Image 1: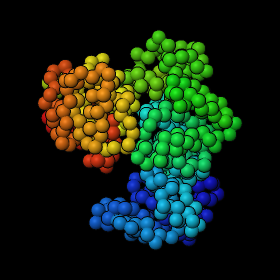
Image 2: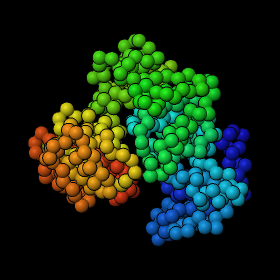
Image 3: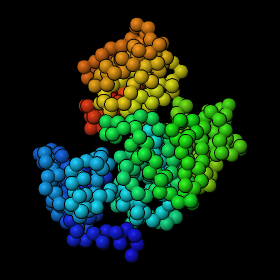
Image 4: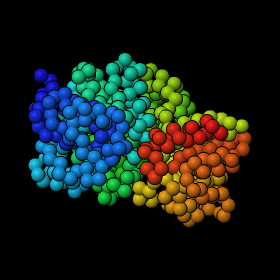
Length: 453
């Protein structure tokens, strides 16, 4: 019996609570039911708003506890936490105090995964970098399972994985907070203030990210950004590799438009198809992570052919000489700054959204340098305006700032204010939760509006 079968067999007839019935936990509920567990699925969504897939879980044998008070009276021996719920949540702590073991779909995957685990985290760039790692390994002839925070639940797929395969996983700080296992190879792209609406402070956020390598052995490998003040101070338990755009490191760096690995020229930066210096950093990180696993030819092939990930400076259309870009993934100032720096011309920027209680002061000067018209909405609109007007570079009317009632109004106003040769960039520097379920829904809605112009 392999580790996967042994784990789930050990749960037979036990009371299991699954907190959150989103994409990653639905396959988990089915697995638990398959192995004879007594499952309670818990979700704050009221019953009348549950979709058919969740209701189907009830028909399969799960008990649903939903709506207001969805955690009241729940009893469990094992509790699977949804990534979006803080481990210190009082309801989780109460269950823990009553003897429940708290775990997560991702932690169990790390425990039972039969193949080599490679994981990526960071404040910015993790989805693109994770995808690059996967593409480089696939181009080298490897069988790769891509998932985690990037969208695909991997735990149910363990039965299809072979020892020689690779699981490439994107991890959020929420997934990492109470993890007690680390992958064989780990990467932190960079760290900057983020998700401080959920983390109690920046230190908790940083400590969560460090779990990606905290439990590695001496045979583990960690890749870090030498240019980031926080990650530059970290050291792994095994080999630590650095990448940099500013200086030579012990592994990968860029110098005069050329990417070097251990002193040998690998490719020129201009060969990378996707735009932006931040994407050069993503390549440097990925190259360091796959060293010894992916071939040089595979790395070059990906650089020249990979067109980028959806919602990341994605060209939606060109209309009447105006190019519209979807950068909905930019839910923090640092992501938006990277997007702004990707264009040689000053852009028309659509920004603002849900407030994660992070500072916006660094964004103000960058907007003054790179934006000619700014259209704001959402809870963070006033904060972004204040940051721009407080910037030393700001002069009244440069950029022009327009406060909009909502996202739709901002898109229409930006389109109306554009002329041939302009770039309209939707890069909100904010989360989407004020008006949308997530950044992907926001990006799809933006693309719909633009295509209908």
